[in-house]
Length: 198
Image (cartoon, rainbow, N blue to C red; front, side, top):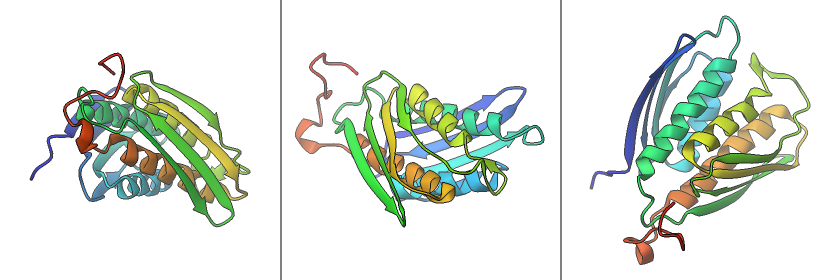
């Protein structure tokens, strides 16, 4: 049965041209091309570990740097999450994940509350992984959470390798989101809030 929890969005500015498609009930099939190789690797991990079918194509001003590309992809992916969830009827709403990766351990917890915010800390020991500015990881998560209407807590518990910390963060957020957006058949016709709306 085809999922109706899907979204396809485009966003074009003077800095980026982005197309995103998302299926929340997928199997982790990804098609990622942003012009930023490490970021492609992270988005691929996000789709695969969230079991989201995810396409992200971006042409950005990477000759300046990757900031606009990374942040704007977070904006559009967040908007796609919100669109695919609709009124959030029947979702679990909350999700969390502790993700180990060798010496690294990262915790992510999410609430699709409608109040987009991002809290926490990643202590990255280097300024770059390959050509990727490591501070852009946090910019992505802020943009994702804000535009998805998702409260995100993201904390590094242990870690000494920037690649591992960022990869664990993307995977932890993906797995927390997978849990939160899952349909609970016991509440399939209700919105998981005492207010009756999210």
